Image (tube, one colour):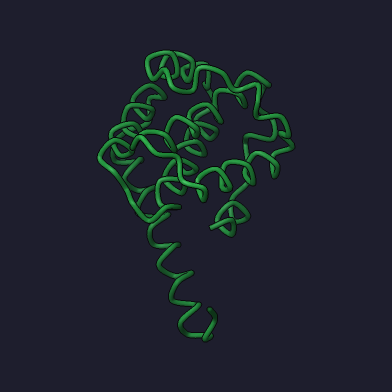
Length: 145
């Protein structure tokens, strides 16, 4: 799945420290939305953070408090950064191969808080799913394990 992050530019690189912190608090909350944080979800979050130059995830506090996160996420005013967050959330929600109702609901709530239209969230989600499908097809075609 890390291939997806190389396709599009990252607006997180120019985000403020506070925006970056909120970005990853949202991802951590999403990983915990179904009541269980999978090892692959933590690996995904760590790799994403490292690729953005963030090495200390201990600064992420209050990631379990959904109401606080939904208020904090409103500091993200850059539409491209907001859509990047939705994209990362969609990718993360598929890492453990289980898209729960809680994850879907939280992605929608974050989208609303960021003023991202539901149609746009659906487009982003479908794009991520299509990309995952094509990566899996490539493994079959090229006989990779």
